[in-house]
Image (cartoon, rainbow, N blue to C red):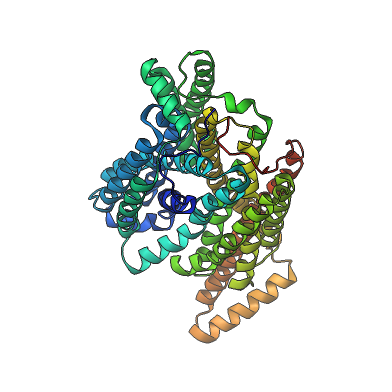
Length: 531
């Protein structure tokens, strides 16, 4: 059998890697860069802030529809053609998002952007896996990790800086020149490997009917899932009096089972589920989904904590989070070198999960007297953990997947990684709001006239206010307001720290699952795309 490394052009693989990683970096960046700009978008387009959340939801839902069928699309269209088409449409839709004159237009263009962007991650991973020999598999995944890991880390920082200093429209416009350059580079450097050309030719000679039923079931499943995650807390989950969450959840479950049943029985499935028969792939997919849930939960909660309780603006809250990206870039090649020397990927995954658990536990033990560097270093520890496990996890899940199933495997793996981020974002918001209510009630138990600490503090505050304003009644009211503000601040901070505690526990609970995986070592001598 011919391998994916036999290409017509002999091009330095690192040039190809640099070219294909750029569009993936843009696509992953767009999952987080707009988060900090939602209120500016709502104001600029004269829309309600709650409605501006559809800018995120629409993108994620469209992305989720394309990711699992990317394997079918790249086989039918050719990976190179599909990659170039996705880049072109993504770049064009980014420009259209920047010039949108209403929220409805922006949401429409974000859907188009998400549909195009969904094909970039699987194509990038497929190109990297087919370009590098197996002994350099860890290095290839480290290059991909720069895009998939660093982009969501720096997204809030970059988005906050652009929004504060220029305009929210530029968070979309910056994709245009970068996308144009990447499109030209990939057009000149990327080619399909022989096994993909053979599969495409075989599909052309023996065409199979398109699975429209599968596409419909997939679309309903992913749209319902994303809407439930995005709007669940706002609509009070299963307490929704209008039964929106209940109906969407029922549609999600029914269509999901219908999709699985359909894809297992049809002769031309839209989504090839056979990679899920591999133990390493299933466990690895679960771990990456949970790891990204932890990453996104922390990435959403930390800026909210800093902006709401410490008075940071979007730029400065982003600057507190961004130093962790430097450590990620430094560690990725180090981990790749360890994999190249034959280290078992499972031990690196365990070490990475331990660091993620430690970083979140560190954050959970903080209080309102912390400084910015306390947050910086706890965030660094978390991202160090994610950097350590990212490449080994990619090695472990793809090592036993044959080349003809790689497109489907990459699509499913990328989907679960992205959906893990969506789940983390949704659950972080839910935990924060509900635990804040819990802590408010618990703090009330100690706020009574028989508490000497409270009465002493109230007297001091009242005396100070009376000295300033000379109004006894007004001083009493303002003193009570000061105490209530402190109560609200403490409850909110404890709720955010609870989010970090849950993230740390989740990361720690994943460690035993790693031991269920088969030994994964990047062996020397064989090529990745070998049959």
